[in-house]
Image (cartoon, rainbow, N blue to C red; front, side, top):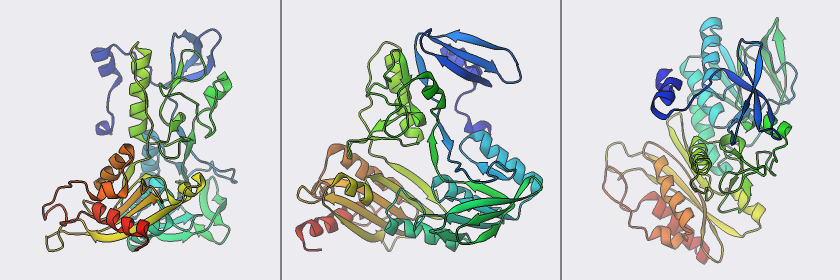
Length: 398
């Protein structure tokens, strides 16, 4: 556990003079008088602390739909280090044999894989046609197949309806199509911005339900800032506010807000939604817009999917890789990319993410001077190959 903690409170005080009050909860924010109402865990007393600047970084909460018995013992939303430790403690105490994961996002998939490794009988319920909703279905299908290959029982296009208990513990999961026995349930249905404190204080929320901020991370209230999973970001391609709960985004938000609070100047220019993950033996990556998101903007587009190898085909360890690119008709501008493949696949998404920031066309992506050596790539890197196939489709040749 210690290796997962970036900074101890003592270290922050000794090296940077930051007084970190752990195990303290802010009960209320008083914007008029510039103060927060605090309570320490285990202490019935509360008190007010004044502030000159207030940074809201309350993160996100696991989605918990209004389903009967969802708070029962054995049902876990996993979104923090502590909640992960709670799952481990439960597993060690109860020794569950049957686990059901609700939702096929990043957390749900990673939990399903690890529960299989613990020799459990694992079922996963996903209401969409394929898992990994941040991918298009044709790419998500590859992840679905990898899950089933390791022994996960996958039930797609099903919705959670209820939980049945025995005493105080979960015993069955009921969907709109079946009933599954369960000793352990993981809620992997995504997260929502944790904005209750901000909303109660009168801090404005944006169209996504997260705290509305400008490019400096200022809210609509003087001297109040927000960042991380509770705050909105600007998407450089859709040109709309989004909430993307990723550590990379949160760190950038924090740097910008901290610089401005400290008297300097910094701006968060926006994002393109780049993310990577490892599910079973597959590396999964995405950036930019999905097909459904492009359709929402009203743009006409083409898509191209290629299959290649992560290394030269004759080189030991060469694995399969699928690359999908999406581009705007007429201009040829790259709009998004997705990658699913074996070791060496995922970080290629950074090429496409950089191209998105630069406003490249598919032709410019194909012309990039990418490196080649048999241990790392075929002569034509899969990203460049996908761009070339996309160019043919733009011309009407594909």
